[in-house]
Structures are given as structure tokens and as C-alpha cells.
Length: 84
Image (tube, rainbow, N blue to C red):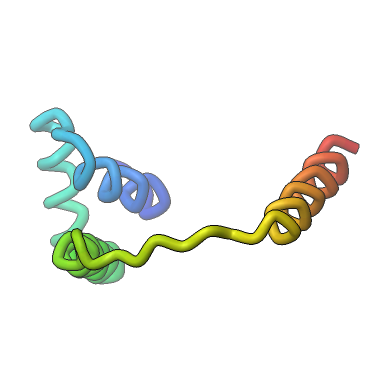
């Protein structure tokens, strides 16, 4: 039996690809006993549907070069911090 943390990952994967039958059954069984994971799966489904409904209604925007540089700098700093 999977733990909730694994169920969350599998729930997301299940929306993107077709999981093996046995794994899908494990998800359904887990949802029967864990209302928190069931709620998460439903919320994720609603988000996916809402985003799908927005398809074609997006606005194109460009991030300013200065913002890109700030983000790159912060990512580099975070990487260096995690490596030390």
C-alpha cells in the first residue's frame, strides 16, 4: 500500500498519463480510506479542468530582461547554497 506522499505523486501522474491498471486500483482503494487524498485528487481535477477551459484565452507577455537576470541570480545562489 502506498503512503499519502506517493499517492499525491501518482495522482498527478495519472492525470498526465495512463498508469498501469493495478496502480490505478491502488489509488482508488487509497481514496476510499483517505479522504484527504481524495479531496486533493478532486481539487487537482478541478484545476486541470479550469486550465483546460482557459485554453485559447491566454495573454502573451514578456518578462523584462532585468527580471530574468534577477531570477537567474537567485537560482544560482540557491544552487550554490544547496551544494555547500
